[in-house]
Length: 388
Image (tube, rainbow, N blue to C red; front, side):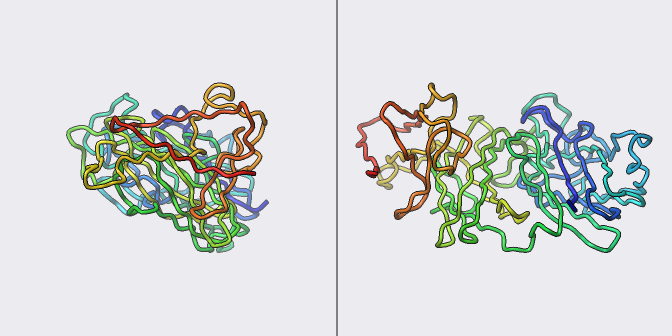
């Protein structure tokens, strides 16, 4: 093993997790070289306008400078920290933290913490509310880490969600993991890269290397500010309130369509669904795509004949307990697609339109769905099915 593992995970829960907490950042040197410096750039994170706030001038009034959280006497790597510096100033904070070392040897670890804030909360008072821009490793998915080794080697990669975590992200930096292959490309079918939609059912198209396994991360964000906030951009959120992730295999044509269900967990401030895709064997990530779910943004049925259409993707059944929200006789997903860790059998659809379908259906099995009926009326039920 010849790698550097960089983890951002303050713990707690999705609402309150913050890098203000001790030991939020953990760096482990598993190379055969001393680490000379490490830089972490927040400007590429999935959430916009996140900065380091060492003095309390960029976000709310709380602040915390760079703090080493492990006793130097118990960890010799700590004695190797010679300095730290903040680079790329923005709105009272900084995009980049650089840490310099004289003796960060192999098999040593550094743990530290620092305040990171969304600039949208600039000038606000500190709040204990869960609705207040706490930044964890999840919001910092997509941030870029660069490690410089003593032999002149430079390793770089972007953070991605820790599997199953709602507060953490990590990146493994090694020359053996390709960071140079072209990143996957994502688009919302029929929509702009930043769009407001009324229909929760959408399709994300990923374009990339045929046969590659990809992960699609969906993070719902909310915007919580005081007094209209600071320099708010369209589609800007400042804290994560829900997360989901699906996997798929890119088809022989170089694309895969993934049906998704947008969420608006907080009816007043939520609904900003951020998307980012990653090859499972690479640190190459896509650009960020944002769809805001706003049921009030419904087109006039008189001018749009599709406005009364409600599309329910079979594979987007309600998550929960087998035997309650859904029931499947098998203990595993036989198709090993889309929701591979759940019991419902899902496979890639081979016909026109792509996406996924529920398969291996047996009598007695069932699925349930949450459906938003925006307008009362009579609807025709049309099913898309196939025989074995």
